[in-house]
Amino acid sequence: MIQCTGTIRDVLKHKGHQVWTIAPDATVFEAIEKLAEKNVGALLVMDGDRLVGIFSERDYTRKVALRGRSSKDTRVREILSDRVICVTPEHSVEDGLRLMTEHRIRHLPVVENQKVVGIVSIGDLVNWVINQQSATIRHLETYITGGYPG
Image 1 (tube, rainbow, N blue to C red):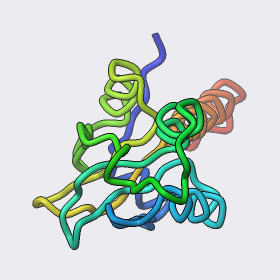
Image 2: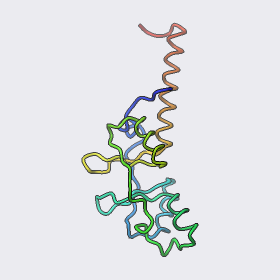
Image 3: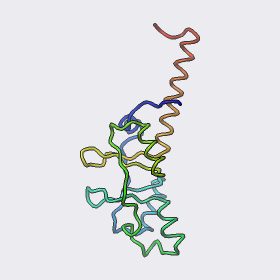
């Protein structure tokens, strides 16, 4: 098994701390517009500074579109996923990937001292692992070919 190194903090340093949010009383239509505008797959649902859930494309398709509900008449609070799995910046990338796999989710809010400080997606973590593996391969190739200093 190939191990990945690094923490969620490392990933956030690389990708940034930008978080897109939506209020619980916003309409699902407004949330979908924001997903499209920001080109993201999920929004954190915030009531002030308090994380109350997450809204994803999956929530829309399963809880609105497939049930024949209107996105303009449905509020985000009615369909959000309120059992949010979070990580801290100190969690390892491997921990994040394991949580996503176990809970069948694609986004993890990052919380530190009860404050949201970022969000990571499955894509962010997979890209991190690929970049780490590529760097390891480059170092090993340099070592094998004699170009390793020391």
